[in-house]
Each structure stands twice: as structure tokens, then as C-alpha cells.
Amino acid sequence: MKLNLNKPIVFFDLETTGIDVAKDHIVELCYIKIYPCGNEKSESMRIRPVDAFGNTVHIPEQASAVHGIYDDDVKDCPTFKDIANDLLNILQDSDLAGYNSNHFDIPLLVEEFLRIGINLDLSNSKFVDVCVIFKKMEQRTLSAAYKFYCKKDLENAHSALADTRATVDVLEAQLDVYPELVNDIQNLSDFSSNPNQLDFAGKVIKNDKGQAIFNFGKYRGQVVKEVFDKDPGYYTWIMQGDFTLNTKQVIKKIKLT
Image 1 (cartoon, rainbow, N blue to C red):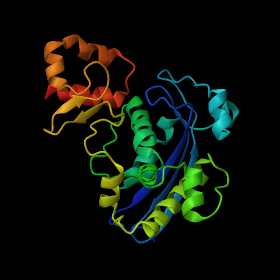
Image 2: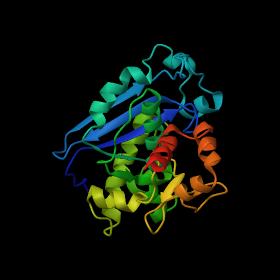
Image 3: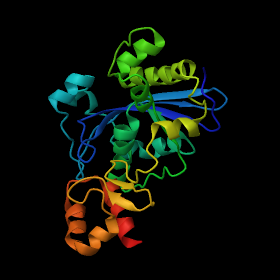
Image 4: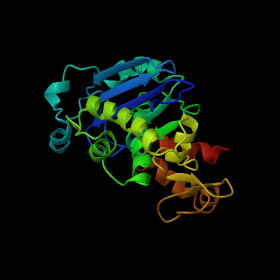
């Protein structure tokens, strides 16, 4: 079943230096942008990871062992800053989808933009996470999802292009398998996203009263503003701590409002 779209949707997948959103970097990004008319645009981008000073970041061997991308493969590639404007043009006016994208790919993408001083505004975008749908329905990995729904083996797993194409195929197959899934991006987003999550890392969420509360640490479940009133140093600790820039941005906004 083909996707019922009212606006473009960008399926994307990242290969990275690791799995820490606050510290790691993108080394490959692949996207498939699908338009309501059915047309597609796709591209793969290799990216040279750099730190805040522009120094090339080493790709750890354990990461290279997973995706097959090594330092030499990206040494002459553009940095994220170099491709940022082109990427913004691709993402604008689009919803986003991926596999485990709500928990990793989207947070890291936002983080990379923030590192170069760009606030990626996704407030009008819906997020569809095929992994969440799959786990709610079947509890498997992407390769198993592809085997289960598409009835064939996923070749070149952990290649960004292969994983991204498989994600498109799996979501379309899920719509065929589960009639209770409404073929509408808003409904798919509602099913696969957490509407109460205020930052992409999930450190701050809304309670049943709509108040921002901490979702980690010693103040888990407590209202953010009330915590800062009784423990002002906690705000300083967060802003100086090993949290994503997006989390710090959200917490700062809460504190100032």
C-alpha cells in the first residue's frame, strides 16, 4: 500500500561515529524524499566529522566495523556545515521518517545543526518511526522487519541507502498488514511518536497537567520550574553537563518563560 501523503516526507538514515547524541557525529546521511504525487528524490552524502574547532574527528574502529566507513573514506568529504544549507532545502516543508529515528537519527540531526548555529525548526513536521511501529507490532530489528513484511532478506544491511530503502518498503508493507494503521502521516506520527516529549533526547516531558517535568535523575517526575526554584544550581549543572544542545535549549526556554 502506497503512502497517503498531503506533503512531502523524507525518509533518512544516518551512519555515525557512535551512538551518543551529545558527542557523536554523522559520517553518512542518505535520504529518500517522497512527494504526494509519488515522485521521489534520493541522495547519499558522505560527511567528514569535525569538532567545534574544525578538527577532523576519528571514526572509532567499532563504529567502522558496523557501517564500513573509515577515516580515509571521508577525509576529502564536505563537513556537515558545508552541506547544511542543501540539507535544509530538502527538509523544509517535509515530514520525517526513519527506523529508530525518533530516538536517534532526528535528535542527532538536530544536534549537528545546533553545533553550527542553526536551529532546525521541526515544529510543523510529523515524525513517523517505523521501528516504533514494528516493535509495538512484532518486536524485531530492521533486517527481521524486512524479512517479515517484505518476505526477503535485506542485503547490504547497515548501508545507509539500503537501510533507508528498506524502511520505506517496510512502512508500506505495514500498511498492508495492519488495517488498523491509518494511511495518513498524522496518524502514523501519533502512533509512533511520544507527544509528551519536549526534547529529542527525552530528558524533559509533559505530565498529565501539561507541565514540563524531568524524565531523568534525582528529580525525575518533578516539575522543572519547581526544581529550579528550590535548587537553582541544578540548572547550572545541566547547562554545563554532558547533555545535548537541544536538551539545554529546551530547558533554558522553560526556565525563561
